[in-house]
Image (tube, rainbow, N blue to C red; front, side):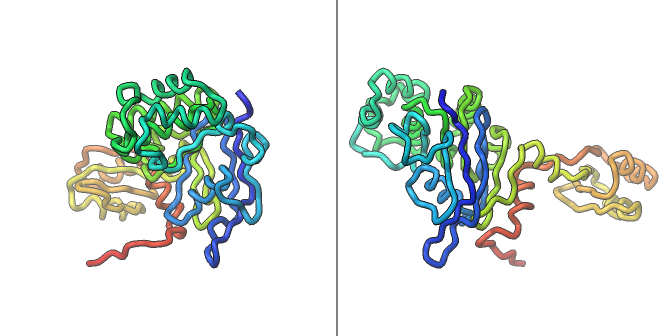
Length: 306
């Protein structure tokens, strides 16, 4: 397999008065699933389009295995992508759609049948793609991306339209692609799916990278030594505050506490005669980390009405 590394370095792009990319830089390494997150207008789609030479950057470079996309001969053998599951001729069957693209890349029917099996399309391969659900179109788009057995794979919102079984399949499929040594870049708004799938996450905002860390590092930083307490006692927050903690209600009978360790929380509640059912280290989610990091980068935010 050829070098799969994707290097995005200092990309800048303007559309009229709008700055879409403002120095976007990150690396997608082989053997990993890299999640690509960010609010609307963060520059994710533009970045992926620049990597694939669908848009040109005003400055900076995007290289796949050290080469720009435009220089790749038969590019599907180097990088596969799914940016729009609706980009197909609805009158063609799924197999004919794949055959048409395969022949353009010097690939044969045997490879088409292989990716049909990989994507779970065997039972619908001879149905017209125009009648597919969004989830099935996603699978067809993924089969298309894999036709050339590429070293790098770029997928934009691949979980969209998937039923629960499809989501479980997609998680395992993405991890399997990375385990084969491919560089896998996945843009998604579904934080829970990326938390369970990605090795590393690039978070973008206003056209630049806000964070580029492993999922484990992001979750540890977002947890920030906080403690979760379950208690129905109305006095719990006051007792903890008197002991020097900040206690914030985060659900029915639940508080998130900062400023004290778990053992200190237990000691304060016990000394205060406050009943509790659980004291545990707070485990942040990827969504928690994302919301904290993108707080100042959201283009549109709903106002809270009272």
